[in-house]
Length: 324
Image 1 (cartoon, helix red, strand yellow):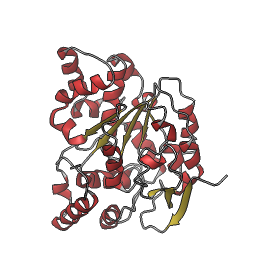
Image 2 (cartoon, rainbow, N blue to C red):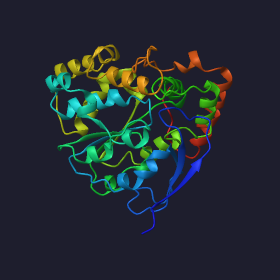
Image 3 (cartoon, rainbow, N blue to C red):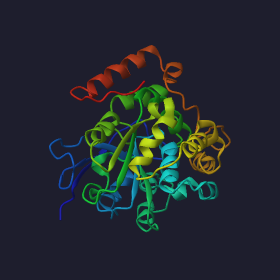
Image 4 (cartoon, rainbow, N blue to C red):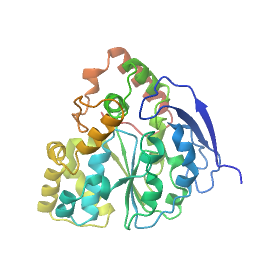
């Protein structure tokens, strides 16, 4: 049987210890693809993923699954904690005692990271139900059963300029990238960085935002007034909480509380990744700033202008607009 994908090796100057080579992967078989009238753009993933692409596509999905999907650095960890607690009746005891990465697992990390020998796709498939699963994969590379079984899917988008800054720091310190800042930013503008294309990543889920099993959020709205957003998320999960309970949850989910919480700040994962990828001994915090608009402090006017043009071109014809 022929593969549903066309996978092509690409040349890149963005290789790093965490991912030494990359491929472009195109989904050809649009059976069960929810946007069949709009074929997906090819995606960029580490070359290791070629061995897992079909396994992920055929991954068994259950109705009681919860999937958190984002492009990297869009508030994924924050959303995972929020969604897990809302879906688990605000069980702060378990949230404190069991690390978030165990409660809400990263599907493809072992399928993309060169130095992680664990088959995390199989491990996720064998998790005790109900499962909370996170992924950065674009729509076309996610399990096809998401759109036939229809579990709950929470998607979060973030302004690409702030993503660029946060992703650069992540790529340098977690992935071990030692290339130039300019090469990385140019890679984003050319949609040649891992998990690109970035804007189309969000647009695919924006198109599905009215599906009853999809909740589309933005990082900026969460930062602006998370407390206001919580009833909407609770309703999506069929939960009802008192104002006092939601006030308490908003405090728990505040950036400062998340940053000092060992269960959510990913400190152990960061140290392990930095050691594996040649950054041991350097200082880096997974939850860095979380500021909306911080790109103005780190991007030159030239790059801000280039990103603005890029975003405008990518959004042409869509009613979606990034928050800023």
